[in-house]
Structure formats: C-alpha cells, structure tokens
Length: 173
Image: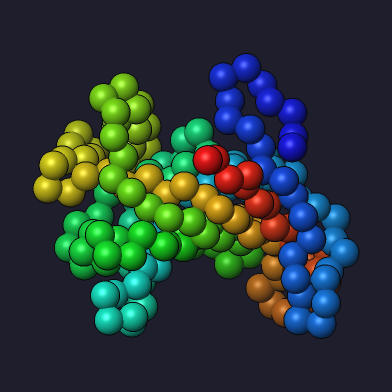
C-alpha cells in the first residue's frame, strides 16, 4: 500500500496489467496521476448492464472523493444498477486513460451527501445536483486501469506499454 496521509483513504496496490501476450513490465504510474484525472475530468462515461444482459453506456457528470466516484443518473442507468450493480466508469480522454471497475450503490449519509453536493455544485455550477428522484450513486472501485496512449499510433504502442498500470483495492470485509 502507498503512504496514507491523515484523513485520506488508503491507496490501492499498483500491479502489472495483463497484456495480450503475457504480463507487461511498464513503469507504474503513480496513484496520484489517476486520481488527478478522475478529479479534473468534466465528462465521464459509465457502462451498466440491462436486466436482459445487454450493455448500456452513457455520459454523466461526477466527482471523485475518498476513493469513490459519485454521480447522479436517472432512468435506464438507475434501473440497470438496481438489478446489476457492476459498472465501469472512465473520463472521456483516450490519451490519458483511467478506467474504474466496481460496483455502484445509492450514496447515503447526510454529511457525505453534503460534501458530494458541494463538490458537484462547485464543479458544474449547478444548484440542485442530487434528489430523491435521481439520487447520487457511489462507485466503489475494485480495480482501476490507467495508461498514457499516443493517439496517432505512430509510437507502435510504446506509450501504452511503458505506462500501463493496474491498481487493485483491498477488499473491505
């Protein structure tokens, strides 16, 4: 585990991702690299699973706080999460990639929701970010994947192979 500063959640463990032909041996990206991108992004994509097994993707706004991703989404995404909480989340960048895999649940706790709402309002300048009809969800990550990629492809994958990092979270029992 990484160093823990007072009041901060523990850092996940950085490990080598599995490549197409075995395990890559990149330089690991620091955890702060991933969290900076998750905090700074404006638009994120979520992928959920419909009750009949078909995938569903959509863009959302959200905030990263205490190793969790908070967002509000009604309609189909909410119905999907009620049946199957597995979810992936990623900021829209394809050059500085961060992919969160985990499970989502309705965020609860008055103080927590105040903190999330304040961050959401400051980030998006929106006065009514969450409601009972469209509550905040929190994604508890199980794994994060990050890499830097050359969008031109002219590097032959060198940026990806040199930076691909997988972070695993210890299970909280």
